[in-house]
Amino acid sequence: MMLPWLLPGVVVAFLWSWIFNGNYGVINYLLNMVGAPSTDILGSPLGAMAAVVIAKTWNSFPWIMVVVLAALQTLPTEQLEAAALDGATRQQRFRFISFPHIIGPVALVAMLEFIYNFGNFDTIFVMTGGGPGDSTTTLAVDLYNLAFGSYDLGAASAMGVLWLILLGIISSGYLILNRRLETR
Image (cartoon, rainbow, N blue to C red; front, side):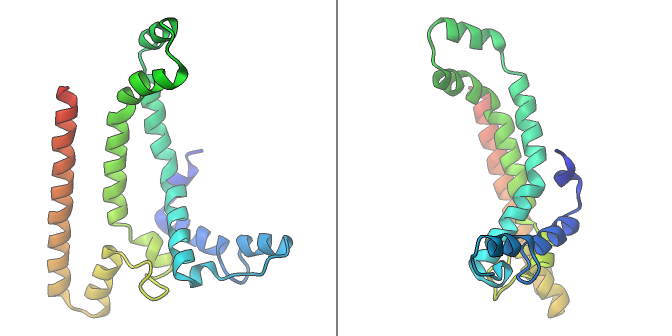
């Protein structure tokens, strides 16, 4: 179950590139089996973005589930049993006991995933190279192309510093929000 998370991003990108390949990919094989025409998923802007999102989600899903499972295993069983005895439905127990208990770890994972995905380079660069067109270009791919494609190191370093400041502001906002939630 943890294998997708343990694989390097480049390996994941190659794996999913082969799955979505327009000539010999598994997706097109399955489409042909049901009589649908083959399609170049990585060749269309919407398909390429969907493929990158699927690959990255598959890669990061195991560690997210481990964190959520760990949070769920620390649920106060006494409170859940008391709520059940008092007549609370499953939805009410989840809403008023389980969800407030796991919201901290879930918010932490969401923030970390946002930061990781903000700098996602390997999956996008290997699968699509930022294309077709610029449909899957992110800040990381743009920064790479600016620094190593155009050799404009000054602009690339300025973009990197602005990127760092933006992530610092977002992370600070998360930390402030987290402290306010903890004091409640």
